[in-house]
Length: 264
Image 1 (cartoon, rainbow, N blue to C red):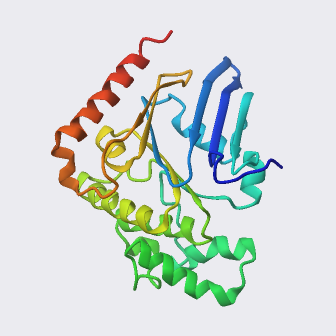
Image 2: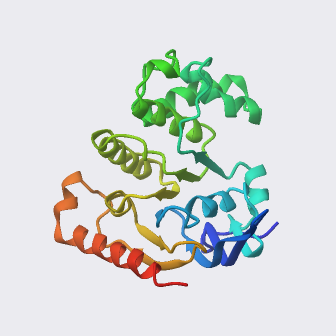
């Protein structure tokens, strides 16, 4: 296992390649990806469908394995990081078990990890407060709206208190009003927990609003065409999206997406 300290990027990819072997021949999903994510960063990945955003997140999580280059998470390989519960993962769909209450769903990773039962109630209460779902612990998923289910999914990922949160387009299926509200809540959550967040999105406004750093990716094979350090303050009301500073960053993201299409 590698060494890690606060000066080392929490997540680091060096010359990362990933090629899938299929019946129709090789599919080059990622090529030459170099990226460092620092402790406390909120990093969004944006690019066209099929560009490898989710694949890269899955490599970080140890759910896919690179065919070239390296990835480290807290100085460990992704497999070691997964075994050490270094991150929480929020999928595109909430993925809650309908036969379990919200509290039961949140307790599931605690049960799997062998966290003492005496701690469960306090952890459930704490994470439900973080996502503004206090009082809903006895409800079942089908009794909650789509936005509330996604908040419960985030609470489940927070329950074992990992320092890293990996989020794969968690708000993509929600309407714009709900999405705006959850974006605000996610920023508040990030500010209060100081976690490192890697976030996949198709939305330029969402990427610019949420992030300290925006990673723009090209069509397959996924390359990084731009890494944009956000000049926006950490405290961001929704109406910051109407400011010249916000629009300037959004324009640079669009240019990066356009540039990505020039690759062979």
